[in-house]
Length: 485
Ligand code: FRU
Image (tube, rainbow, N blue to C red):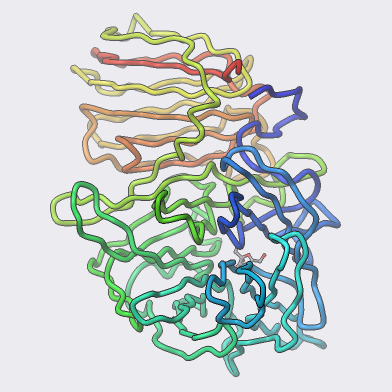
């Protein structure tokens, strides 16, 4: 891909809006050879405000074309998060001629004179591949007499019961509804009391079935984002549950809390609907920011970007199930290998340095600790701007320090360390994608991920590996830079 000179912090590989504010990804759907990305958007300012659905499309999940705004506020309120599906069998009656897209979203209506805001679910449909939208005249289609937090519908077709299912964030629970036609909804169950993290309001759920690595079995995964709570340094973050779903109830199969990402900057992520069966992937992407400082990050005229799209799978470790995430293979076309090194011993005195000096980069390392007490790498972005990743062998933890990575003074919280508890620290496989203002780290084939914003003057000048009080073997190291094709 040829990148023309980008403005400061503008990502080369990640979607960001041309102008103004963006938060959650919405309405992720594949239809007629296009991936659609709608998103929470304020077209009038680079901070959060009255929400619209912005819109972009892509043929390959990496290069996006921003289109006109898809949904504008109306008498029912502003347009909060939601999903989109293809109504293949015209269950709605909107599509006499051929199947089309339906968006299911939250209308958020501010209350007058200090009254509570009201959140309801509504529909819009498109007869022209998402270019223009008609709001359904029967909106809203789902309301609740009591719940003030009643939002972020994610809808999917459940073939076993021949119905649409909706998961909805309802305070600190997820409510499940079903419908034959997207217009009439029946309450099925409510999930969440006494399980998972309740550190903040629950938002943006997603429920889907996933295959288990090396097995023909499947399990259901429920993703739940948790809003910012000033009592916790992590800010807003995302948990998930693994279990079963019978068309009415979701039942988790574990008691521990599972985090989707150990970094601070992956929130409100959900998966694409209607990926063709021949493809079969579950593709996810998140908003690469954190409510703690999202409105203050130092970009000018635009704010926020999405994570790279990631393929999700499940793996089993000692009878427990985990999400595995890896960037979609489409990204591979954007890189050429610049340098590869094998079997190189790193000691306190002898660092190993890779020159990078490019607008974005991919670094893949297989490291084997021989006897160091700490080891890791430094990404030098520009003069005196660097991010350090250390593996502390005794504590079995990976720390990412971004306090020297560039501009950090917009939030006291931004400089705090981000941490992955490792399963073991002797052998480590690391894949890292560095873009103009982000780092995405995948450990051991995507078993753990850490997504972090950074605001340096330049993406990456060089990367060096170090070891303290002992030796580490770089079994294999590979640095790739923007492809010339
Ligand atoms: C999550 C969220 C959603 C809501 C939207 C509003 O980041 O708070 O719950 O629909 O953002 O922009």
